[in-house]
Image (cartoon, rainbow, N blue to C red; front, side, top):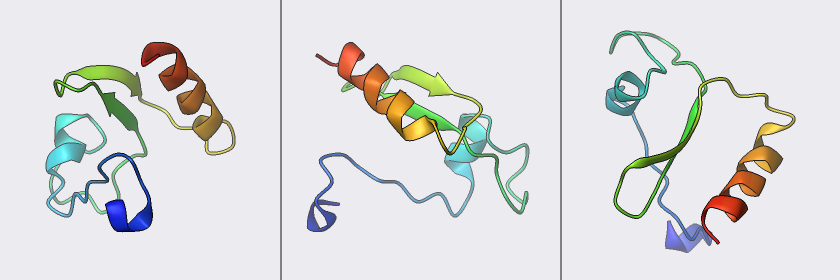
Length: 71
């Protein structure tokens, strides 16, 4: 989403494909998947996984982990 100024991809998951793949949903008809974060490396492999998201601390935690991992 270069027009928004992001230096990374933002994905939409209307069909719940990603939610099912990464464990945020148990079915494609689930009304509201759980909030999880999955950080992929340049090859598309899972580098970091956060199965439970604390909305207050999560952004800072992810940023700190990414700075260490991707230096």
